[in-house]
Amino acid sequence: MTTIAPETRGPALVRRPGPHELHPVRTHRRRRALELSLAAAVPLLLVLLWQLAAVRGWIDQRVYPAPSTILADGWDRAAAGDLWPDVWATLKRVLAGYAVGTAAGYLLGLLMGSLPLVRAALEPLLDALYVVPKLALLPVFLNMFGLGEGPQVALVAATVFFFVWISTMSAVMAVPDGHRDAGRVFGASPWQMFRHVLLPASLPAVLVGARIAAGVAVLVIVASEQIAATDGLGHLIFDSRALFQNDVMFVGIVCVAALGVLFSELVRFAGRLLTPWAPRDRGRGQA
Image 1 (tube, rainbow, N blue to C red):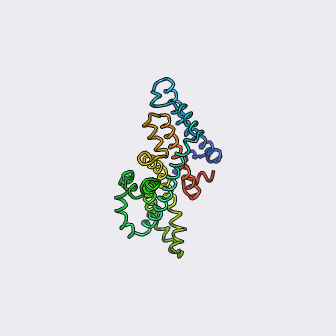
Image 2 (cartoon, helix red, strand yellow; image 1 turned 60 degrees about the vertical axis):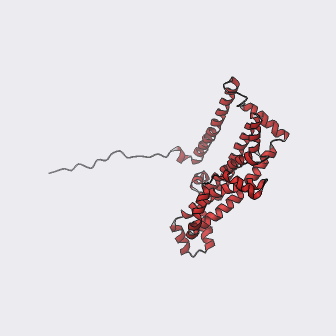
Image 3 (cartoon, rainbow, N blue to C red; image 1 turned 90 degrees about the vertical axis):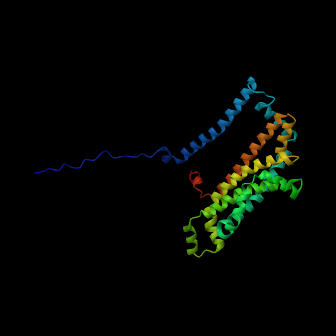
């Protein structure tokens, strides 16, 4: 008689929940605190190294002033009211050009993403214009609008337009056909299709392009002000370099960096408010 041995089984695999599962809010806060600490520590370390190099004489302070000198000069200029007119001049040009370029780019991108015939008619022309360096268009805008605010605003608008147009058109074209079919099944009108299908599905990608455009807009306006402006942070940087006032030049550079970061973060914050369903924000919302 043959005896069959009972089936032997290995040890059971037991999975215990981790800290991020047991305490999601606490884990998120610790992670966020670590990220903020690293974000502040890296630039602070670079500034301290720069200060040390200037104090020890490793670099020429006439060319690269110490951060303490730059900070003191910037504080004095701000207290005297000499800095704010240039900051305001740059800011209003960026805001005006960004608003015009974003509106035009979004509307045309939505139209071209939704209508294949419009896309076939306009995309080759816009692709050709996109690769033209935008600063090369400054003489054209000077001929069109003359000296003043017009060329600066138009240059920023033209730059922002292409970034928003490309991101919007691509986002609308990437909306799954199933979403569109569901809207048609429920008898959605063209406005309802846009409001409840195309807009929610494409807006996160559109806002990514808008955020990139915000940073590029600051870069373009500073370069433009160095060429054809009598005020603004770009003019301040270029003019102070010509007069060998390197401390003032670095004050302008720091202001440009702060303005770019602030503008980009405002666009990101607006994106979080407008798209709470975006995947990258879902975890933060739950925490």
